[in-house]
Image (cartoon, rainbow, N blue to C red; front, side, top):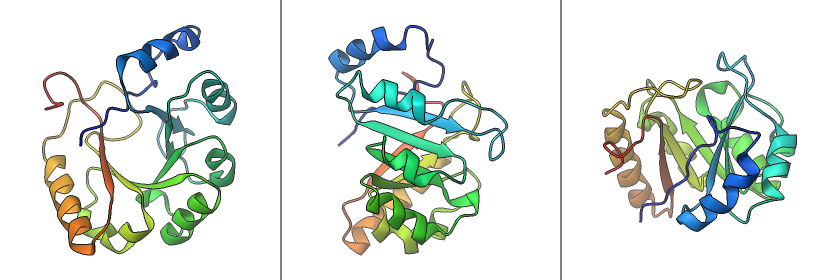
Length: 179
């Protein structure tokens, strides 16, 4: 089943509250919130206070994508889904467990140059895997079609392991690339 989780990264934050009912009425499944710290990726976006404000004004689940390597407990408290990068350097298994222990669904994210096979051992600890189809940190990039092979491999491996795993793809998705 295909689900839609539009990113608010390029939203006008002065009008975002007014846009939330429009997202709900459009039938999207959740909102994707990209959190960047200027260290793991070169841009800075927003943090827990903005996410708390968004959560207070929508019933949509919040899909929080951390492009940072700390503050798991704080973000798990305001996220429905919480994802972090495999490449960030944290203890992957422990971080996935910590996310779940703090009440959010756990998502492991991989960059374009990371192979799907590198994370197979962590799939049982994941509720979702996010495959980046652009280099993280910058909006408006062109979709990398080779990322679809990772989606296929992860789907097959999840099935082989008997897992009910959601797979998300992020970056360069538009009317042409969505199908």
